[in-house]
Image (cartoon, rainbow, N blue to C red; front, side, top):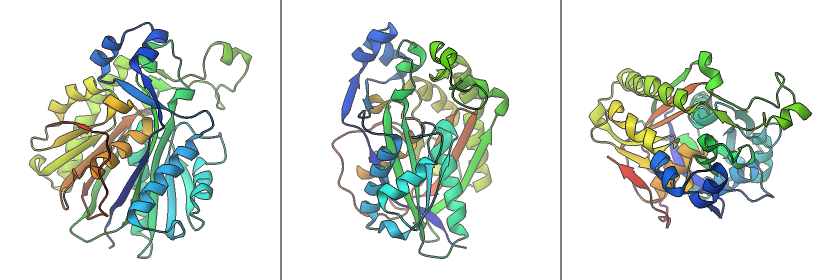
Length: 344
């Protein structure tokens, strides 16, 4: 059976920087309050002319360029997003057009902030069943700045825009994706939502007046969900894979909230692992946060060949997902100027 792994990474972060001071004014808080509650100092905002597909295509091209793979050699494009360009068609179809990946079957996945991990799992299964030499682009991209109520301090302070991508392909038996885990707790779906705009509550004058098209979140409920479900899901995955906690060298989580991640870190219990964080500069970029952080770490040379990397997402639905991989040799990439913070 073909072993599938990450052969390249890419990301795109918009140029416009939005400071805490700018967000704080509308939300009725201070820069100090935002940092103390989240660890976030700034985030990026997409240009008004850009849609999610534009950000996703730029991240995808960066991964292809790093791997020196032609777009026409991509067999699948799996795009994770909860802020698509349109209700239909799938935003991945537009990304296929923008990147020139004319031979790729393209589709979207919406598992909110777990989306990238869900998409990676699906793409890995597809490639394992395919002929050798095929590739899959897995992309996480979101523009949350378009669906935020900037007077709501629970949500306005957290989110930024961005896209991250990985190119999956065949790797040696000693490397690649070893195990994945997906979990949904549908009974808690109300914790995170955009209530209006779908078949349950179509758009109308009333929903617009009520702000029902904005992102909403029960912050305390989400925090409890993460504490109750994320560590247990990761422990179950490692046990199933037969991997000791000490073997994990890198942990790349969804960049939801730095304070919350700090709280749950001790529960996760990875004594030799570094937790990679990019949220201080980029905030919570939704389904993009795991691949963006992964790309930044990779380009800074953080991962050695064969090291065990654990990626984890959690978000609306409510969902949890994780991917355990042995880092495969990839093309050298010059480090970026931005620096990641690490815990471990």
